Image (cartoon, rainbow, N blue to C red; front, side):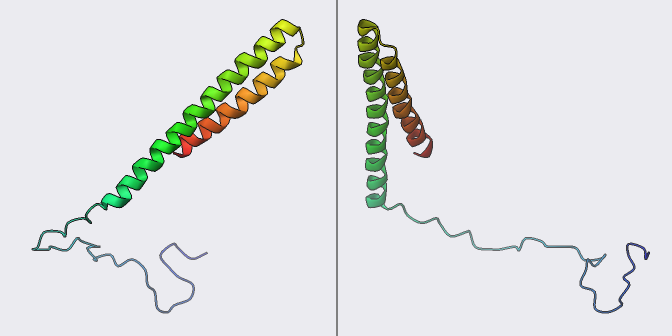
Length: 105
């Protein structure tokens, strides 16, 4: 087997050149251009969307608590345990959706 530096097929080799200093940053005399100016309309739209999303997250959390309390009370007073299952499933569904919105927001 040929050594690591030897190539079995001679020809044009576009590999590393030992004395090549490598890539260097260019020296610019001018300062870099400033970044783009913020768009006030876009910033207002983003702020409105974030407030709207936060409202949905709070609403889903509240609905989960209310569902758990109401169906839990019905289950406690009626003695039927499947109301607790409904309460837990409904609350978990609301809270998972709220957590997903919070994670994506």
